[in-house]
Image 1 (cartoon, rainbow, N blue to C red):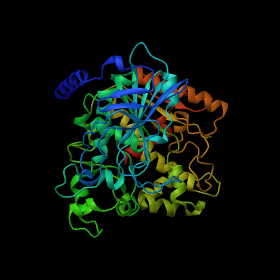
Image 2 (cartoon, rainbow, N blue to C red):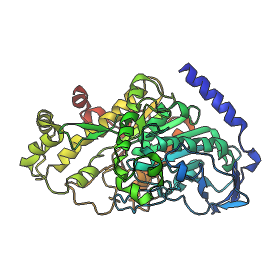
Image 3 (tube, rainbow, N blue to C red):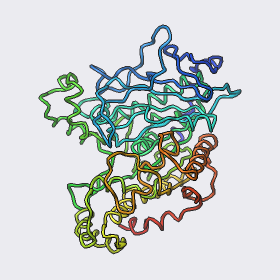
Image 4 (cartoon, rainbow, N blue to C red):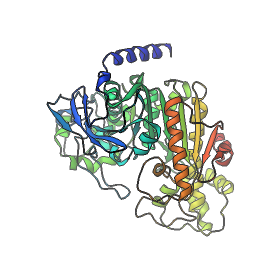
Length: 499
């Protein structure tokens, strides 16, 4: 790590010399970046700047290339509209997009001037590496409550971000390279928005949390951030493989496999030039087939799960957490019909394999509500999310300060449309903490609003100090019930780790 620290210091010194002058940091609607001026919107409480390009359009010859520099623009660029949504197919009630020119970011700051540079929080959105956008997250609460600058970033998704092909430089890791380009833009420009480039926290949820793991493991991210938050995206996250009973799929894939997969595409093309010329709509037909970032690449030399186990990660304070009932969301989608209690054993054998399935049935006995989907979801939550989250905390804490949380409020309204009924409700489902950190327009109770204030302040305190403010190894977060969690016991991690 000595070499990593040396590189980090050198990078920080170089970036410090290229900062926009401090005099440019004021409370007006026009800000000068290194590529040109932008005009945002100013209200009584916040300033917002949208659609700021941090890399050239990844179109034409730039499709499936690492991000290229932006061409400077004359005059003042309009930054009053949010960043566009990167090309993707419809997911969970959200419309798709055919916009390939999408490498833009949004900046939110308090409206008033600050006598000193503010801490910076860079948000990487989730969406399984195939969906989501920077503009889906209204960051006003985080910015105003914490006197911080919040940046939300886009990155290429699916076939546009994680496609590989033999001989193609950067195969399978273009989306991760985009995230680093956005972090480098922050280093060069955030001072002009009132932010402190030496006090950057990178945060992400779901695929965004996995992305934070990747950046922690990436040599190219050295010096680009000093603290990290991993929400519902532990480095060893693995989900059931529907093709193999008892099998698991990780979210990381060797570059060699991704290149072989790309070479086998049947889209009427026999070479890369032809593929680069295809319309977005044609590539979206195979969008979901490329949802795993590649390692053995320049951006990601080894997979983050191995990196966390061997210590080959940047050593920065890290906050790692999950929701109590992560898999209810996916169980509702995968198993929309009731599973009778007497059908639990067969379904468990199908999902976990015959031998492990029998152990799961014994460890997660049915509760008598005549629907075993909640028991199945609990087992999948513990195996795929909670215990890997516990593992990430344990491994990282050997070498860096680590804090933990579990979002356990089971009454947040389901905000994904069209979800079927689920036994006992979806409870603290995957992503259910997000409406308490960002203004999603989801109706919250008085207790949940109080919890939201607590969480926003805790995330902000962590961004400032590297400490969210609690002594417990894992803090349980629920309306009216914030306190220590017996996380490993609650999620049967001893059982799952023994496997």
